[in-house]
Length: 321
Image 1 (cartoon, rainbow, N blue to C red):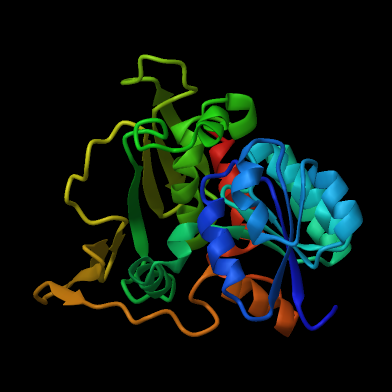
Image 2 (cartoon, rainbow, N blue to C red):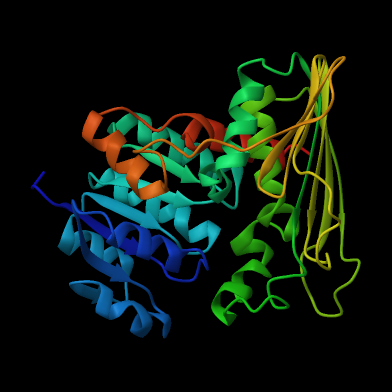
């Protein structure tokens, strides 16, 4: 590997890609080598890279990048990840892991077989308050977690102004894997998997409750049953504004804790409610590019919320209802 880490972006239709390009381009050890996309979005990105392609397979063959960002639709991103790892690249996939459980399984198997690093990027991981809450809960600071509630969503991809290429595949059940149930339900599935592992049973309700145009679903609720805990995961493409409540909420035997307005709200047994400012994320873990590059430099796979193993468990949860 040369002094510079050669990064290629495969797909521009995942709306998160533009922020990722900015973050990766800011890393001093990175060369933004190539980008590939078959839509007119390529023109928007072309100037940020040394070379541009309309076909991601051609890009992988000609460029042999060190790192590939898979940022297409969920189904295509899984195939990009598999083929990139087979060609020797480390891969970061923008959440969720895949559209189908079989694709997620193939991704995990390929990572193990090739020894390449595979990271599933969940944007919430880089939120200091969210990270602090989750890691403190996982460390047992709030006692045994017996219930978890997480609601996430917005008014809908079209309604908030996502570009039409992003909207097109989000509203396609084959390319997305579902609707809001996958787009936002995946976050809750990841969180539950990381804090509680695999549930014994998953119950799900989803439907189109507010849209007057075709979508796979615009609202969903998953109920996860664990031996000594439950989790309620809510996903929506219908919500107007915010309800003002803390989110996620972790109910432990020693405390109830949540994030509200960027702070941790913790209510312990026999104590008044405490509001705590989260510490900043440590250097080397402040964003997905910085973290993944450190994993590569130190030759250790991504761990925690962004690990491929947690991403795979989240996919299992989503497809076990």
